[in-house]
Length: 114
Length: 112
Image (cartoon, rainbow over all chains, first blue to last red):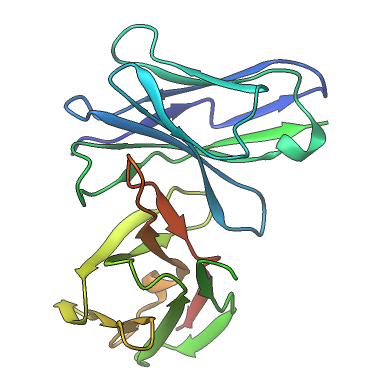
């Protein structure tokens, strides 16, 4: 069964460092997303990506964050100058179509900022 | 007002019990509703998907939407220890890409 894969599963970094979280969406999917879940809180939308550009972003997704699809298969989330409050699970998700389709999530990357 | 609200629990039931999980939503324009299951330290996985009002059944799971009261429910019959997880209700928030708006999730523990 096709699945969304994410790496690393857990990353520990020092405050102020840059982090890149990687995702390989399901191959025939067209819409890609990053969500974040701070421990004990709800899953929050960060950004959606379609046709090689950001299609929607939340107020959380400020200049500290960026996304890229460098090679047609990987989908990355870069967090510059990490802060303590960036510690969370980051989930990548993909969907084949935009209209009511199923969103498939990866297992997440746990980011711990010290 | 939060767009989707959900009692975080935890909810503990004995094996075999009927479980009722509930959410309320604020925007009457929402039409699609999903229930996701999330095991500890895993990503959410889609359980049920409903459109508009009414019931939808899938095995031991029944999803119910009452648009008049903006209330959505998930019922689990004959609950099993393997059902122990966090259950998230969600709805597409509209916009260009149908991003999902999630409730906080209800942690369910089914005791053997």
